[in-house]
Image (cartoon, rainbow, N blue to C red; front, side, top):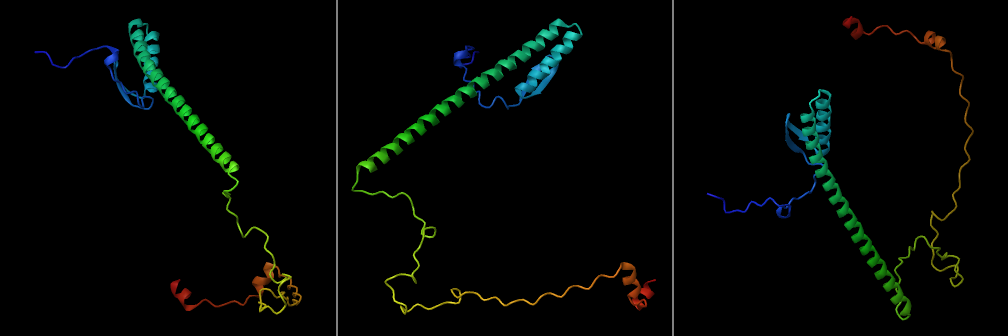
Length: 193
């Protein structure tokens, strides 16, 4: 009894998802047994087997290995082509989006230039970095405006330092060891020995 499913072998009905073929690991059943690896690794392995077969004067096996390598070469080139197409499409989309953003930005700036009634200040001023007037020197304030002088505002007075005493010259090591008083061994060290 035949299956109700149609088993068409035409390329149009195949829905191959190329996806991540470049890094995908395949199990290839070749004439010498299974070869496992990424398409690039499988291609290299079959090419090596084809060279070995050619050196041993086995033209049939060499041709067979070359056909296996060619299959994975086609598979890899198809995946590369699809990846390049996707990348180009993404770049085109990104360029279009950027151009649209630029047009929107120009439209906003042109509308703000034409509307003199509305002032749009997009720049946030940093009050700490701008020059600030000194309140004490303000001409409209009198001297006794209730301002109190703080210790931070008073000029710092530094005490004069006394000059340092020069260091005494070092004794040579031999003299240092001979001048050191000899200490008798403690009872702990004597007991340990």
